[in-house]
Image (cartoon, rainbow, N blue to C red; front, side, top):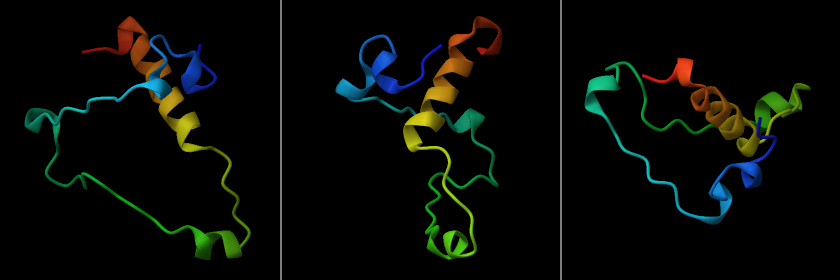
Length: 70
């Protein structure tokens, strides 16, 4: 599978990604955008282990598998 976004077919890090909002799949309790400042938790000793590219790559790998698609 893909280790980083540059390995994704179509060079996903070289073009814009269109995100479509589907009201039918949105749960009322979900927050559409959630931002956090991790400085306080890092001062307690927690370390960031995964980059945003890692997280997006994991999601893409999940949805690439046919059995995980709707």
